[in-house]
Length: 384
Image (cartoon, rainbow, N blue to C red; front, side):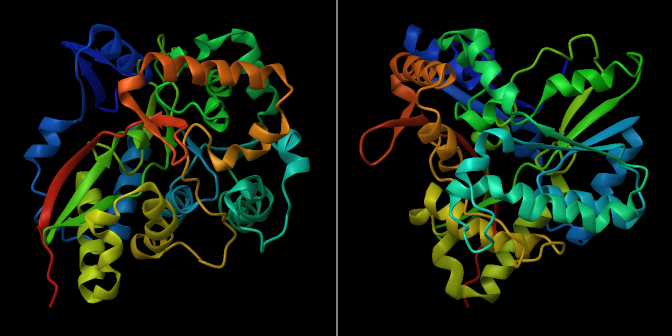
């Protein structure tokens, strides 16, 4: 069983790991749904006190603690700023990563993407595999010669995942993400193969680089907040039920990384105080997906990570949910495929059965479940 991340939904006294199941049940019983993420622990933490260690020191401390905790470490690597920062933290300390796993779907999206470094629109995200992920790994592979690098084309997994269900029931095995890429984002079928190499006493971890800190200014007060969607990127999986020491580890958003998250918040706060021209970007009136994904996130890469190079290739982030721009190749390119029809059936089922919890696009189309958040006060913002 994957150890709990501490994220859970509650409806009428019943706890759910899946937001989909919780929202459908809440609609059926006409009861409110609440969400918490290690709430008692995080509420008791002093977010106002900035840790003395630097961010890189705290990243290194987190990596070292994970290495000491587990027998076999797998890093889910995309080449993005979050996972690359984790990789570099291990490397600069000489800490061994047993395996790096890279997922892509080149067979499916190859004819829909362009490998042009000037084309950074979100629909071209598939090009990141060749223009960013692989080049970054080639740069460091001589530094990690004992690390196994596994590159998986999950095209078949994606289409088989839908067709094996045959109907809308596939959504019930999701935490939240119903866009196509989320179906195979973390390939636990492969993780299961890794486990067969060991007996059940071995401690195995898959490390995931989620998530960047969410921060906001409201009434001259600076807050760090958790957004439930960031914790729901990994699907529900029961492959671990016989392996109680196997675990999914969120590198950044973890009850074991409180000082790290707190330091990130204070570093961002200080950046804004030193650069007040950017404060409006963090104002709560601009607290929306377009602002988070297209404005804040690109800035954060260099504010909180010393390992990122802005010249590296990355496309814009997706701002939609069920109709994610990242999935344009599937949504537009495979409309006649049975998998596409089953995907649409699942979206329709959730839209019909969790209506009170839907969020909508500007054109009125349902596009995901509304977000839940948990805020923690960091301090008063200094505008002088």
